[in-house]
Length: 245
Image (cartoon, rainbow, N blue to C red; front, side, top):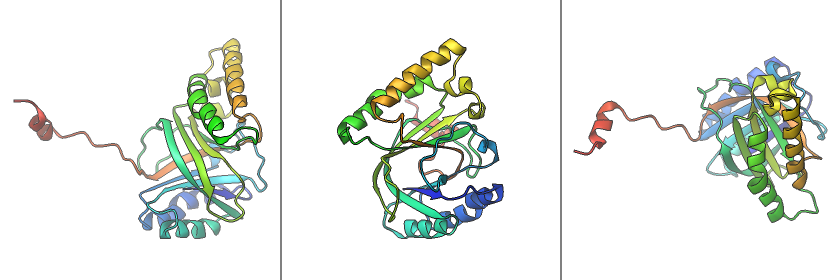
């Protein structure tokens, strides 16, 4: 589940409350995973912002849950709805071609996360759109940008009334320098390299309609509870027990 928060941008106090007090309420429901994305001070002045929604998206909360219709989601929609003008909740399927780095619970993930809201063009059927995005574009996105984390969330359906029509919610993690520097955003060595990377990227996004009618929201990422924690390495005794004798 991804819940988009919409309205007038909140200040840093609002962002801090969302990722602490409000997130704590969501954790208390027992949800297996909770991540909060907010537009706080490190990303406020980012140049990587595109807005079509009115009111705009100002934050996102991802929740992993056994039931999209259970109490955890009902609580999340109610609590988050008190924090902004509008909430829009979406059931999504998650693909992770480039896993973000592990962080301690509640710590800010390094860099920033650019969240893109994509709409499938009416002239493309879903199968063609997904193939061009997942099979064709994924490699290009990773090769032409300085991303160190890439998560593709395909929207199954909206779960709240009045939610804007969105086909996908994409999370791309970049170095913080990329908020204001195109060379850093694309990982380009010089102007010629930047031009080549941008040309490849534009051609690839155009093929599945991600070059237009897109919102991009730069955010700071806070993982409060990781639904897929990295397995701890075995201790020496356990490792010895596994050695052939």
